[in-house]
Amino acid sequence: MATHVITGAGSGIGAAVARRLHARGDDLVLHARDAARAKELAAGFPGARTLVGDLADPDKLSWALSHQTLPDRVDSLLHIAGVVDLGPVGELTPKSWHRQLNVNLIAPAELTRLFLPQLRVAQGHVIFVNSGSGLNAHAEWAAYAASKHGLKALADALRQEEHANGIRVTSVYPGRTASPMQAKVHQQEGKEYDPARWIDPESVATTVLMALDLPRDAEVNDLTVRPGR
Image (cartoon, rainbow, N blue to C red; front, side, top):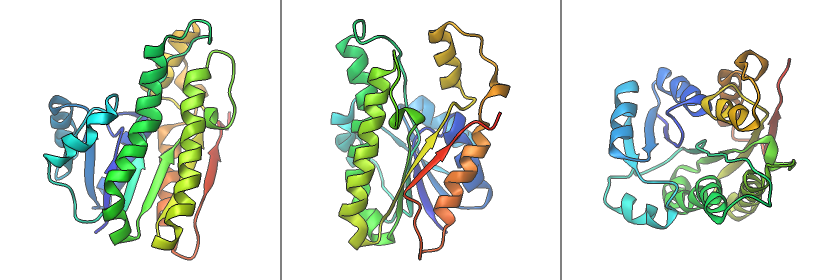
């Protein structure tokens, strides 16, 4: 039975991926920002384990995880959690920059560092659910896009560093996906939100599982998923 560590399993793409893996009987270790959220996740995914740590404060993740029981092996580490805060460069505050960089880039780097021993044991797979903003930056998306461009750099470097250890690394770049985050983006943009216009999280989950389930003779490095409507 494969063991998957997942961030962002509470909604959107992360929840869709977790449901698929849970349904097929895999072992889930779900990250939560606090104990209350961990309790909710455990109730939603019976049998799953939880780990608590605030991605917005990556300096404390090592300490937080050192006080919890970690799996002996990790077949996949799925970085799906993320935050977004739009605004022009002339108005974005350091607080906004720090929050997006911490959650979207520094925390994934730190969690990867902390789980590398278990990933090496399993010759596991690290999947970064990035964003179209990880490939192109647009007006008012500077901080979010910077965090996601950095996430691409993290994935590319990790892939080269860990290839000899048998670890596969994949970046997935979804376009706009129907999720609570997308609803927030539309609110910030002052636009009406119609989820039917955007990618279903289940469709992105399908691409993630495809990369996970690929035979060992191949590896998906980068995968872009765009709205089909």
